[in-house]
Image 1: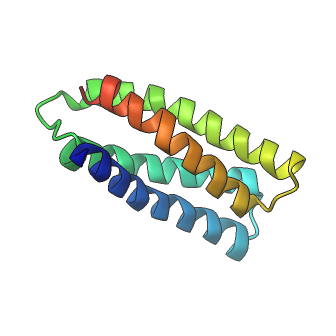
Image 2: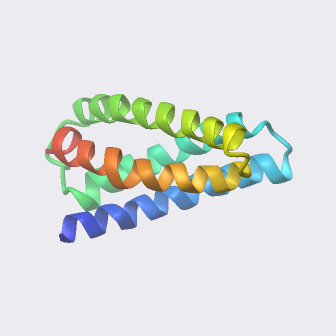
Length: 123
């Protein structure tokens, strides 16, 4: 249970980075929401990897290149799920891009990301 809570805290920190980049790009710099979503996801992904490796899963004994490769595989799936989900929810459910990103990110984060990081990346 402690690992799950720590993973959610790390995810929250990564989400803050992700959403900050997304909001700055869409609201302040008028970038296309999908490009902003991808850029935010990349920024949050880097944050989440570093926190997961050092703090959540205490996996510093593992080789960084191997962990990073596995993380990138999971992260590419995350990027596709979140970006595709944001597009679908925004276009078809007619929600705002920010609302879409919140909904999709929560679903992907609680399910896909946590399980694969725990069982595959940092085991």
